[in-house]
Length: 119
Image (tube, helix red, strand yellow):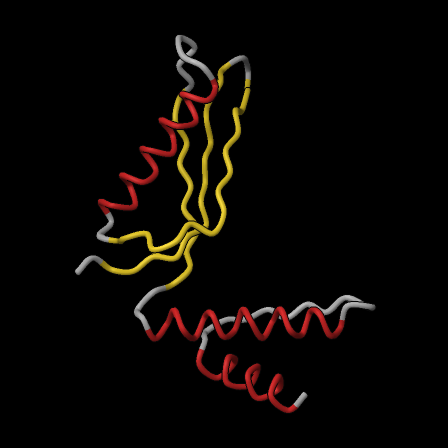
C-alpha cells in the first residue's frame, strides 16, 4: 500500500492535472489503475510525449460509402495533427460518427493519442 501511495504522491507532484475517482467495491482495482495511469504519464513526460485529444468534422459525400467518408475524415485529421508539428506515437482510442442536422450530413471523427514534437 505504501508503494501505491508513493506513486500517487509522485504523480500528483509531477503532473499538472490528475483525477482520481474511486467507486465503492472497486477501491483496490481503481487504485491500481490510477497508479498505472500515473506511471504511464510520468514515463511519457520523460520521453517528451503527452496525451492529447484531436477532433475533426467534414462534410458528407453521398457519392461514397460511410466507411469511405469516415476514412477520409480520419486522413484529414491526421494531416491536421501533422501540420501542427506533432508526431503520433500511439493512438489510444478513436471514434467516428455520421451526424445529421436539418437534413445535412457531416462526419465527425476524433482520436485520443500520445504525441511528441517533430524532431
